[in-house]
Amino acid sequence: RQMYHYGNFSQNFLWGVSSSAYQIEGAWREDGKGLSIWDKFTHTPGKISEHDTGDVACNSYNKMEDDIAALKKVKVSHYRFSISWPRILPDGTTKYINQAGLNYYKKLLDSLIAANIEPQVTLYHWDLPQALQDVGGWENETIIERFKEYADVLFENLGPKVKLWITFNEPFVITVLGHVQGAHAPGLNDRPDTLPYIVGHNIIKSHAEAWHVYNDKYRASQGGLVSITVNSDWAEPRNPYKQEDYEAARNVFYLGWWAHPIFNGDYSPLVKKSVLDQSLAGGLTKSRLPEFTPEEIKRINGTYDYFGLNHYCSVLAFPVDFGTTQHFEADSDRTWLETGSVWLRMTPFGLRRLLKFIKDEYRNPPIIITENGVSENGPVDLNDVHRKYYYEKYINQVLKAYLLDDVNIIGYTAWSLLDNLEWGVGYTERFGLFYVNRTDPDLPRTPKASVSFYSSIISCNGFPDPQAMSFFKSNLVISPQRKQKKKQAHFYLPHLVWVTLRPKLSRS
Ligand code: GBH
Image 1 (cartoon, rainbow, N blue to C red):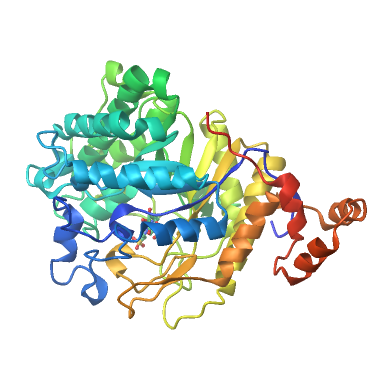
Image 2 (image 1 turned 180 degrees about the vertical axis):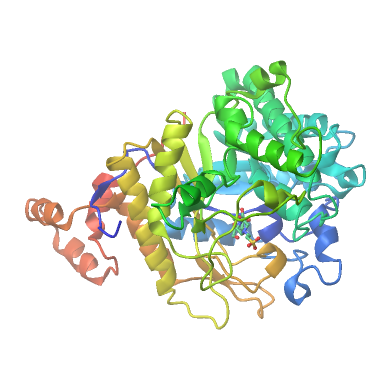
């Protein structure tokens, strides 16, 4: 658990950073963009810390060059960003396609490709057009058709420039924070017994339809990959020698709700049993979890080209007696000890365990970690030692999963490029590799210390063994200038290995 492991990732490993539209773009009413549920939510008094909004955010809509320069500084091979649905389809439907919105993303894609950075594009990172929410949002099953049409517009117009797609970012968060707790837009919390399952059902079907559109109409000519990103903490039994704690850990609803229908077929038996048992305990005659028909199970099963995973921390699980309560929280044994910062604790060991779990549970899919990162709040300190520590330890555990557990891990993405709007807590929690000075109207981006640190891990494609490196170095002829440069460089590993180890992404 504590040991450091030396070695490298695969030759063409993807190294990236991630962002999302509402958190960075700003320009909330520019160039014909429609309103999203997050525009409405942040403008509702009392919803967001300090009354923050995404009206301006990091102004990435108007500061594309700065973002590209930041990406180049990190030397990533790919950049994950999301598309604002109402920027493309202001009322959510294809009745009117906003060309200015498409042009913005086309320009972003061209700039990335010119910088030799592979785009990874998320279709939905939570900013639903408000017009669709007005007719029921994810609760109304006509959303499946709307999402499919939206996906079709993106594949057709942007697909020639994109090889990696993600349909949904974190269906769990959309469902639970948006429709159980009400902490996220659209802020619903009045039906925690049934609403999450209806919403979840429609999201899974929407994902599957978008995947099929790509598969049927675009895959042959565009040759990209389409998948979904699920978030999962690692649930560790509080006492690993207690059967009840072990079972409570297995019964946390992170993956079985989403990944099981898509990777294995149908909701997992554990999810079905938990919701059924709790429904019956409450005197209902059947489960509150909707059922897929056999045709639907077939249509959804296998709609993935890789496994997208967001991971931040582990939690301790133990059983809690909820009696007969009819509430999402009572269906999933999701209670754990908390320490330090509100929800995020540094638990690198859990990532390796989670990756191995995914390998075993979902038959060894290729995995891309699409988010992983850590925040700070309070006074600004550009020497973010805690973030360097986090990335070093977590990425080293990813390496162990790859080399020791044979997990098919093909990419890693840090969250996030910039300090941005951290949803309900506004700008108070900062996850960025780059600090954004919000008191300066120009919103300048300044690298934190973790930028060169992460960049050196990328350059080395992992953690080369220093012993092997000294052998390597003594057998290399180094020019005097090169030596000079090496001395100045502030990397924890010699920068010159970069030349041989840096994976090259080929675009075909
Ligand atoms: C990601 O979600 C998001 O994709 C990204 O947009 C966001 O900025 C980033 O994380 C950092 O938060 O308050 O106890 O109910 C991460 C998954 C799940 C983490 C919900 C926070 C809240 C727990 N999130 N969780 S609680």
